[in-house]
Image (cartoon, rainbow, N blue to C red; front, top):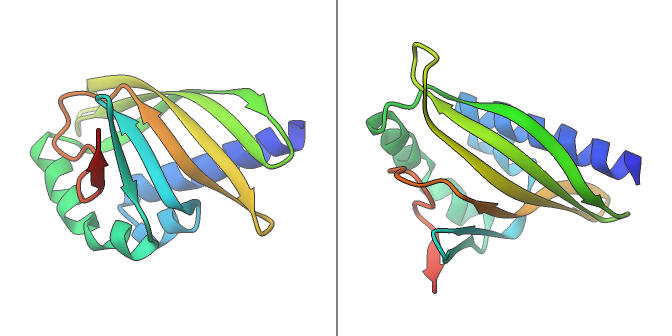
Length: 141
């Protein structure tokens, strides 16, 4: 299962670089849909890549409003791995342009291998006080 964990970590690193570059197409290349996120005891999801893509310009605006310059990954720990699913425990840090952290948080990402390709399909984050958190998703209690 070591190969599965390595594949998931590599996919996460590509997604993270794309997020920091605000490159939606590159993010989508590392995702599966429907895509779900649990934050603040609310489920958020995007049924399709088009739903996710449609709101990314507004997400960028909201990130800038909160003072975001980039998100640093402080740690990635594969905590469970199987042939077609991997759970990654990740510590993230939202940073200002001068490099100072303004919002650090833990998150669990679940990567699945569908049709031979690894992609994140579920995220559960402890991110709070973020303007861009879950923007443009469907919400359910």
